Length: 315
Image 1: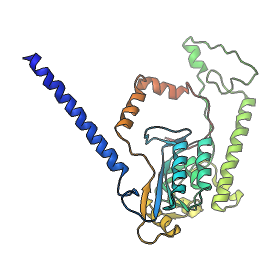
Image 2: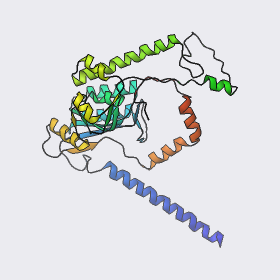
Image 3: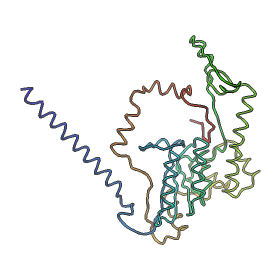
């Protein structure tokens, strides 16, 4: 009896998989041809681009809501600029910031956009998230948005004593006395701290100038605000760091007005919706990496070099 039933079981599984695949394909097609897509209706449009999660360099073939890949975002900006039906661009920022280079790349892309740009702030648009906003013609934040955190940070994990307690020794062969500076096997010397501080000060100066130019604010005024503190969206409006309070819909309406669109604008969202292959690839990328190992690598900084960051480092 068991031999007769197993082909039916296998067949049922195959049918189920095909059905799931068909549903996923339908969702992907529906997402690709959503009512906000130009394939459905014409007219002047406002582009909406998301910068969500930590800002990092490079690109990703699949959707990750926790990471904002600079190359992906720059590509969306370029598409919006080249699309003749797009009259204005809205960038929705919900990010604590991220890498210095990646942040500046996105900032420059927005700064060079020949169309009106409005930034809409979500729960958080801090540090690098605010840096990006400075490229906009108008900044809209909600009253409870956390923004500010203007500054630069670099953190170095020192695990030398822990290694010693565990009986682990490191042996480094290098050229020059500074080749291993920032390594987690030893603390920085006073001279090395000064070296990194000089680099950080350069990036800090760039951040200050972005605010001076973007907000038309005197440099001495900017520096009094650029001490790393957070501001609410409401406080940021009062301080001149943000133009007005409002949500994403308000930002879209403002962008449409700035772009000369009459009536309700068409919205084009430059974001690839997650499909079945995105989910499978995301899951596969985590296979073979136990959570405990991943956490340990993050805590110790294993496998990555020290980074200079425009990021809010709080909880």
